[in-house]
Length: 379
Ligand code: SF4
Image 1 (cartoon, rainbow, N blue to C red):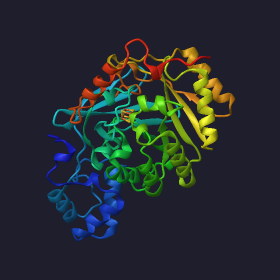
Image 2: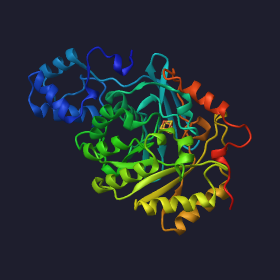
Image 3: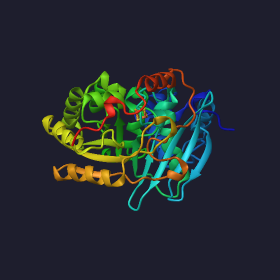
Image 4: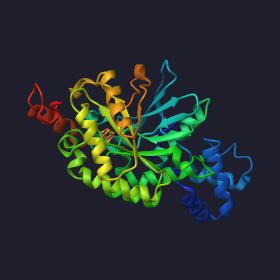
């Protein structure tokens, strides 16, 4: 029977990137080329046991059997949407669950991976944020989601987005080895452009990511000014927009991808007015950040008190950005029928940080008809 990945009493080999696996193999008295062989078995062939690793010496396999294991999080539920989107609910132990979503398209297959069970950032429009926070995932639990998907899907995962549950940059030490495995030619061999880390704007960690593993970067922006962003994305109080934009510029100096993707969830009467589009244009021009915008129709959930912008408003907002020369896309909503759309990943999280309490206190403190920060500005 499978156990939670972190519960494996032996060494879970999915915890190691290439360098760490080479060290571990050396520590048990084996040559470095064995690590390369093992890496291919683990990640290219998504092996789940050592028995089938027929090109490894019998004695080495016996050693692996006694010292190591290959474990991914157990699957609690496996949903397939009518549009082909597939969502797995995974058991993260102690009554917590995380989610992984695969989105097939004509020319690609994108896997959306979680980095934490829950999230401490508590964005207002995010179902995960309302669930609270339980714990960081380990490297094997992060990469294990890609391992599982490649094992179970009929088509390959060509793109990975770290946009599932959690703020990946607040779990930096576990994230980076997993990213390295995604890029490693002996493991998943994805190009840096096909691996995206999405952050709410943890400025110091954006700088560290640029140095450690500069994959494509998406930033959850959602507001053109600090007052509104403080309310929607509370981490903005710590790292305000000027600091965030400066960090984006520094990232672009070292990132192989030459633009930042700004994610912008479209909230009716909150952040979707023409003057807010103009303010965004002014913001990215003032800070000279080469960027693309991805407008996301909001997926309402009961506790949010928010509504999605009408389609016509979203299109109008996109046109204003596009007319200013900014590449702008509107995200297609996928997997609606299985709650796999963006912001709907909730799992079931034991809140150890009182986020739910904080959110309900904030909601109680707001006037019920129209909150100040959300008032439509005059045209
Ligand atoms: S949007 Fe991302 S950072 Fe914000 S609460 Fe949700 S998971 Fe956390």
